[in-house]
Length: 311
Image (tube, rainbow, N blue to C red):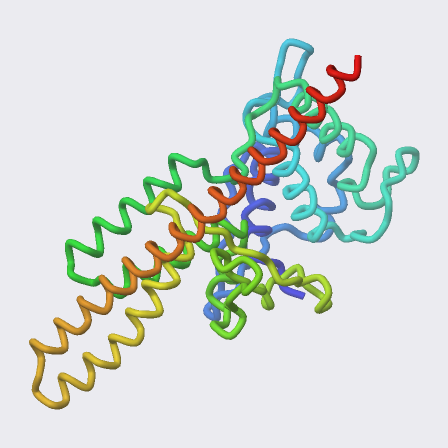
């Protein structure tokens, strides 16, 4: 099996390090790399060569002291280099024997010890900081929504703007993946008759879902913030989609102006009506809840007063 190109680059760096010569791996006429190292040369590689190379990658020196810290790369990078070099070892599947010095030197205790030391530094906070992806923050998410509105509205591409805002707001509410949003079927968006100010949505295409029971129906709540209200975005998207067909009909009949007016009016009606109905049900639910709380408070106060009279 041919080695991946990144693995060949690692071998080139490793051999240049231990030999003190800058190697360049050329390619043949078919574009395949020409490995200039013979099997006999690869058999001469020892566990200390691997350990020195890994130390140099992490600490910047082949023989680090207690005053050196692995600030140049993390343990995951060292493991990747170790795995890449292992593919070129003649005794790839043999564990390294410290006595006979035979086997795969990347599977030696010396190489593994370097990685363990770097991991320890990472835990203690003295290693290289992680560049892993982090979760988006609230202010960053709001900036994305604002940039989406400004970019597409200035170019008169309202349909694309509405589509992206719908995807982003629903993804934020459900903490979903972007591919989940792309495969979200409109048939899974249902009206909740028990709580009319909410919607039922079911994610069916997540990569981590293996059985149907792992994808239950979820409840989508509205928000009083018009910038992130997902229910309003769904309403705007639905009205916009229906108005698009009206625009096409108007264009085919020569009524471009009427089609544009229908599109804009449908957008405004959809956005306003959805937001208005949502806010009405939220206000109604909150008001009824407050009335119920006041009633219970008065009932409790009456019981306390009755108990005090008995005393």
